[in-house]
Amino acid sequence: MAFNLHNAQKIWKTVSKVPAGKVSSYGFVADLAGLPGRARLVGAVLQYAPQEMSVPWFRILKSNGQLAFQAGSKKAELQTGLLQEEGVVVMSNRVKMKQFGWTPGLGELMELEY
DNA sequence: ACAGTGACAAGTC
DNA sequence: AGACTTGCCACTG
Image 1 (cartoon, helix red, strand yellow):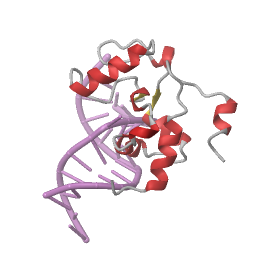
Image 2 (image 1 turned 60 degrees about the vertical axis):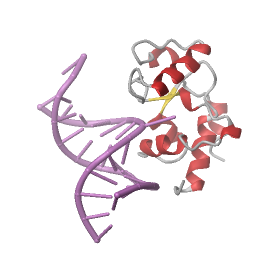
Image 3 (image 1 turned 45 degrees about the vertical axis):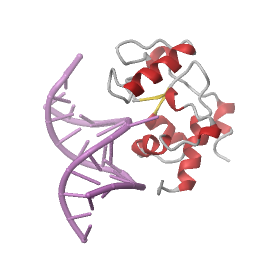
Image 4 (image 1 turned 135 degrees about the vertical axis):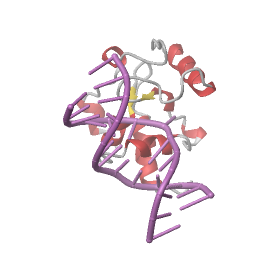
């Protein structure tokens, strides 16, 4: 991993704030992490998320609710399984953001920006 | 240096 | 609802 560790940590930390049973998007996480416009970086960094940090990478989806992985792929199935375990309904590789999208409260937001 | 490629997103048509 | 375009930026060859 040759990407900026500083940014990576902010992203991992932000993703860890997403509660079980809820999902968020790459772009939203990028914004919260103080990296607006860098949704792609979030995905790039998540695949290197250290195991011991137990980052809930699977709660991050595309902004339209679609899983980022190709439908039917091994990764997509794994992600789907992990989400369903938390009660998130996934059908035809997508989730209803209306229903499961995470909308952080003030308290949660304050924990992030120093 | 440079073009292509991504776990993306928002705007236009 | 799609399809296409543009903006992102780190990584790779």
